[in-house]
Length: 502
Image (cartoon, rainbow, N blue to C red; front, side, top):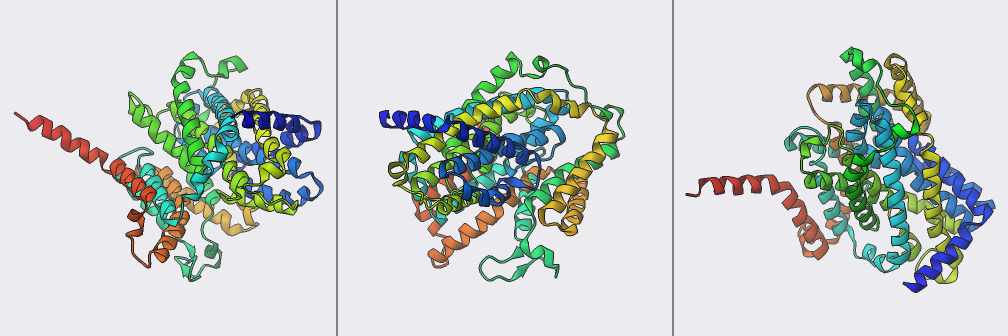
């Protein structure tokens, strides 16, 4: 531990230089903007900025790129709360209670607890990375295709616990999400699936297109169909103090922030969608632990505090397998490896010994970056909330324009704009029949990882699915998934048996 503390102190000496502070600020500011704008995403942004890293020091470039990544976790909650358009996939869960809080005039409290929760989680994750990260990095090595498959299946079961309505409806939406994720070219044979001869569908559906359609455009259509005078403008308090979370909010959010930070850190160590899985795992856990679970979906602040803390902690924990083992835990980390290799640096077990300035400097910069994000976001709360005072007859066309521009900017394709419109109508129709699109979106994101890992596991097991229960970790995860899925039935049987006893 003393070595870790000494290394962290060395890292602060590196991170606090004027140049590195400047690049950290650039990174977190860009990350916040990237999180707000659906469609761009940290992966595309970091990829576009890779040429700049040629002219930067390796430490400065990684500090900037990492700031973009965890800064996007902050920014993704802003549009999720204000206009119900998730800037990042990990912010989908925030739409459920965050936007409902905004509709009830509590957008400031939702944004504030999101910022403070992300900051606290970032601090916890930074010290976790410094003190316990390298020993825990070996956990990533224990995960093969069978373990990934079980982890994603467990995540899919958690998806069915999210959203409004019955679990059967959530299962239906999750199944449709998995089906939508299969659109495109088969990853092994290369044959087109469900493309109906449309060339543009061979690359599959884009998560940003789905998010903007099912949430953004559908929200505008719902407002237009409601014709409710109350929907013309959402009332909100004025002044920074009135916008911040009050004591009751902090009492309700303190435990979810702590649990979300720890859960996000642990899940962030695992390859494959750590920030996404951790956010809805935190949401499910908070609803299970709540005295009144019916509050969730109706503007429960715990439904914002826990997931936002979890996804930020997971984003920073994902640097552990990258720096300690040279293993990318997600696509963004894969791009980070490219940035290091441009500089002639190979991440792995020897990185801390060979380049302690880079290893500890990046870790320390995460704490500095989280402070910067808090300083940037809190004063801007009145500006964000002021958007809700714009009449809906003006705001709705702006949201539509925002979605159209965002969709077109993905690939400069009008086809994506058309798809946003199609999924917007679909999202509106789903609302009419009381089907929540959140399980659909989450299952869609997990579907590609599930197919890839499952097919790899079956190839290793020579076609036998028994490989999933022969590994201790995968077997444990499958048992946990079965318990979560069957828990309502088991509880019903137990209750009924107790009533029938003489």
